[in-house]
Length: 437
Picture (cartoon, one colour):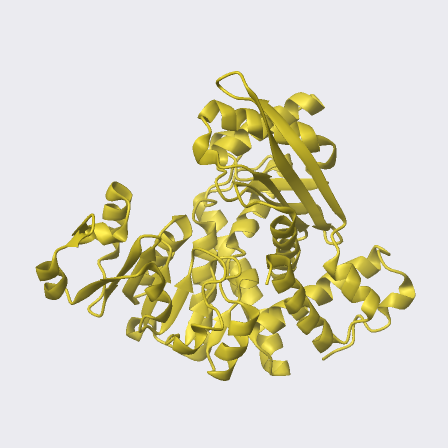
């Protein structure tokens, strides 16, 4: 099932719970605008190359479109549309007055020089400048883009409009108006939600184990915060393999080795040869990359790729709680299997909304000329995420539905309400927009 089909499945389920009309459903599933371009740049060897580019503006009923720009070989219209749609839901879930947008360029940035990437970034802004801006559409970093690229894009945009406009893009370097706390915001927000969930259920994290898939920026920070909460990390995985230890993993040491050598496996292995004696001493194992999904743990945190928990492996998942830091790591079919096992899934549209929340904070700071401290950013992030969890948990409990169903239903209620206020649909189409479940 394609990414956009997953989104529509979740929207349809929430729409049915809410009793939305057919017109409302269609409006919620259709992007406001899909922008396309062929970006032509000069390569270092003097040749010209063209790259397909997209900007999908999904829904701005609640505020300017908001969402990242990814440079990836597989970026296409379907993927970008799905991510834009999810951004609209995500912003509504955490109460941010922004809409959903997403951009992408079909390119393998690993094959480009720094200069070529800069030229590609400027070409992207030139192609879509008329549809970007602080009050229109505010991009941010995504897969294989970073603060440096956001700075280049900001520079190009300001050249085009002829004035300073730091609020047109977020995720910038701090010296260009970026916000403190943006680099760890996704994991910080997710773990704040998990902590709120623990308090809600009266779980003591000191007695809980966790398995984490992905040790990039978000996964690594999640592992550190899990340790700080008192949890025992029993499995860590990257694309090269899973490190598993019932005794518990030394997270900082493992992350340091990963940074230095390239994989969590390298704590015990050199190439394909692993130190069996040390592994036995530490009660540790080196397993396949996807083994982390079914590792024995109380909490599973997929923080890497989509579609990691599927119908085929969901029956073997041992975790009672899944915290989705990645986008779409649990398929709709797997959701049904997990629900039948009473596994709680804390959905991505809530769990990983910390990134867009701090992006929103950056936008606010740029517009007001303020620059908040790390402490202020973190405090406001934790407040926002905890409040969002409370609203969704209460919504789910009152209606006896899953957290994902509650997140989507609550978000759709807010989006529909904003669309009604802005007359994006005919008045008669809203006859049942506020109908309770």
